[in-house]
Amino acid sequence: MGSFSIWHWLIVLVVVLLLFGRGKIPELMGDVAKGIKSFKKGMTDDEAAADKAKTVDHKADEVK
Image (cartoon, rainbow, N blue to C red):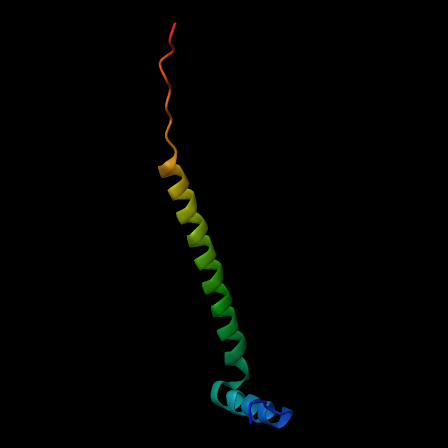
């Protein structure tokens, strides 16, 4: 009961194709890929901004 056979997966695939159509699935995957890329870009932008904010230029007075 815990495992699925090949027939179960074929039925699921047919149902998905009927619901979304052949053209919608590649569009959906492309949108998911764009979302992941923009999320990664946003994360690197946030990390770069946080690194700039943490940087402190401190020059100690020279003791003679």
